[in-house]
Length: 221
Image (tube, rainbow, N blue to C red):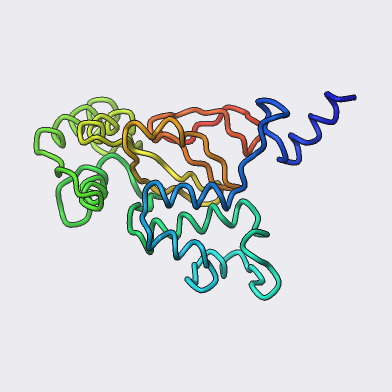
């Protein structure tokens, strides 16, 4: 009977699968902890009053702000709010969808260089010509002149040389936002689950996706 009760609580998200004594952290608390760790006081203030900030996610998800307090938001709403904060307010992430690949990440021209753009947001050293050349040569040797993969495992060392690790907000519905955290913080945030949004190490590839009952899924490439 106790085991059945525990299983029911896990299914409802009231306790973690790791054990009945470990309460699941609320999505709002997770987002605020993230902001305090990485984004600063202005972001904390915005996230503390999401309605006043006017996050686009609130309109997209048709949240009734007249009758719903922030502590009543579903986990997925907080996941979308955090992505919006990172992209549109703190400007500490870049959005990637099906159009992006390793070429758009490291080509040094007016249209591409997305990884260079991300590095500039974090104030770290730009990509060197040698770094670009090495990654592009490996990509084209493996996948031809127009690779359709990100090659995150090969991009990850470029961030690590600068003291960071590439991380992804994997949005189950339509794409991903790429950001970075200090090396020593990455493991603690890997597999953080906020509704439809999952924070994962960009080089993880296949992970046990909690959004699909823990089934293995290829989330980055």
